[in-house]
Amino acid sequence: MKVKQHIKAVVLATALAASATVASAQDKEPIRFGLCFDLSKSYTFISPQVAQAAQDLAMYTNENGGIEGHPVEVIIRDHGNEPQRGVECYEQLKREGVFLFNFLSTPVTNAVLPRAMKDGNVLMQSFVGRGDAVDGEVFEWVFPVGPTYWQQAANDVAFIKGQMGGDLSKAKIGFIYLDYPFGQEPIEILKTLSEKEGFELELYPVPLPGSDQAGAWSKIRRDKPDYVISWLLAGGHVVASKEMRRNRFPIDRYLSVNWLNEVDIANIGAQEAKGILRGTNVAGGQEVPIVKTMLDTYYANGKGSGPESLVRDVYYNTGMAIYSAGFEAARIAITENGWPITPESMKNAYESIEDFDGNGIMAPVTVTDKDHGGGGKTRVEQWNGETWVPLTDWSADYLDVVWDVIKHSSATFTVE
Image (cartoon, rainbow, N blue to C red; front, side, top):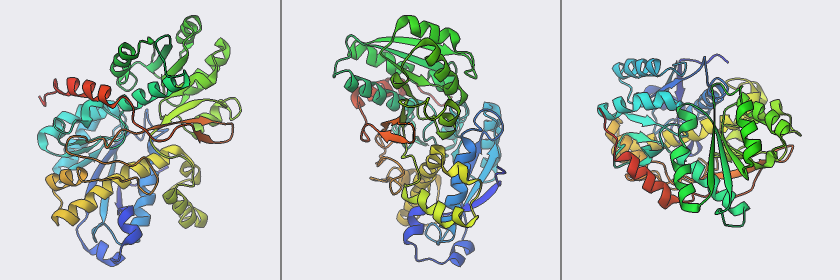
């Protein structure tokens, strides 16, 4: 998919109730979001869907008035998942007057974060990045709206505890992960919960890109964990499914991070994948109101921003969740503080988001000056051979434990 570098967008919440005309939105100054994505290297199985969702949301909402009459300009650049290129993208757009940024990469986000903090620019960090960044008292300019990897991992442990009768003292939980920042991120919280609940934690690192897992799964076969939590990506899940069959590990005891999508299921095989579990940050499927609207309004008429197949992917819904929250914050900023939007007014607006779910696209989030994540709710779903079936409601578990770890970690952060 060819991604346009400049896209005009407006917030969905405003679009659904706007009385402003399209002309008024075009006549006013834009709100500019700097979107530096990996469009060429590591995350190309995720970023096109998220970018396409942004374009579709832009097209739909732009036709319905704007954010209090102002269009949004989303500037998309490629960083190739290289931290230095991400920093260069940030610095270039900053010189052009942009102060709202999103990088959709843990390594790149971590590299840019100190600069954004020092500059007083807003960093959108939904679903990626360091887990302690939800601490708004330390990370004033960072907004990981939605669950972090720490909270998702904690919620996964809570699910396993429920499946094992509420007692983990005799359990063994494995953690298979890509051995770089994304995969390593949940380890601290898993170790903390292991000490609290008394379960045995076994770590199984695998080298990038995740194609060589034979050694890890041989060890899993010997260790016999009750469940394996997985922080793999894309083809890594396909390799894992083959290793599970080879090592006779039940697939319904494999609980994936949220980065497991419909393409991965197709590559595993719909029936072969039956029973696999994933934690999820957003509602999947096409019955979510905004996704259904995009299909009915644009794709039924051949006017979508890319292939319809990408709309039928949970990562498309992820893009809708990220940008609907960001644009909602922009709406609040103008409503509460007027024009122009500033970094400070945008920060205050994010901290005023209350019980927002993007009309069902994600669990409701309430962001405060202390909690920039909004609550950390996820749910566990299971593939039944045809579709994903939720096994739990949206929930955030072990909040006291997670926040103890967050506070311990954030206390060591310095901008320099």
